[in-house]
Image (tube, rainbow, N blue to C red; front, side):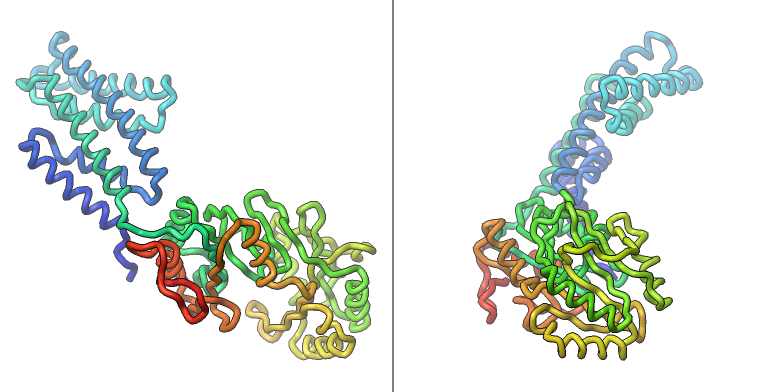
Length: 431
């Protein structure tokens, strides 16, 4: 079962506070309208709260103005609800057109719903013997009280420190992403809230920028991501490669010669003018062809079934083959000294059982090197890396506990009551 979130708690607090204010007013207003306005202002992000409050206030002013005009005009026309219900209903319906059209004319269409709510709350509920000015004022005041309560409750936070001089880096798969390959709603809200507050946060992953776009599209990252296992520093919003480690043309030619000699299909990933091109020869293996058909659907990948042009600087080579073939080719790379001169990764495929990958990078293409580059770029005093691989991170978490990662990040970034937490054995601060 999901936890009761802070937004739910704040909503209940806002309703209770509206009740309290209504008691203090001697029940002069209708607390229901205050509570509606307050609940509308309880939003996930502070910017949304201000936007919704402004819409509600504008709508309240328009609705109250037309509501007062209606109450003053209707008796003179002799079509009160008590005297002529059909005429009253027709007049109210016609006035709805006027209310909505006003929001269009003044270019405040977002406030149209609230204008109608306030207008109808006045003209439908008004009792004939009540002073129309007092009645409209109370409806207006009810809404304003609700708006102020909503803004106040939603803006309230307990005293916290903010470690804006620390660079936080998290893994992605098995760390932030759930089983469906996306962030949870809680993760999106909390990450965006911390990023809006000034947190220096990014992710480090083996993925290419193309496969990062979908899971991170709702996250307001301000820093580049460490992609391709440290081979690239990529700015998602500007869609540009800030830094790339490439394999020299000489070493790339050696790798391609060994691949051709082994009769294998190799995918050469090249960055040209901030665009990723993937050169390859037509694969004979049906599984590899299926992988290409699946991946090339992305608009961020550009597969070119042709020979790699001479002199191109390759970011990394990738091979997908049956495991025995991969084991044999890895031995070939070792015999020719490639595993010593370049960074070579070999691991089983999760998507294609019985198959394995080999990826070959520049020997400097590491997450540690890119972390240092990013730390210098953003002026952070220290870094905290969160991940699931022992020895590869400062804070170790269990794979798959994605909401726990966000909660842990929240505790480290903004510990309660004081700006610094205690030291971990890795000399990093956590609360």
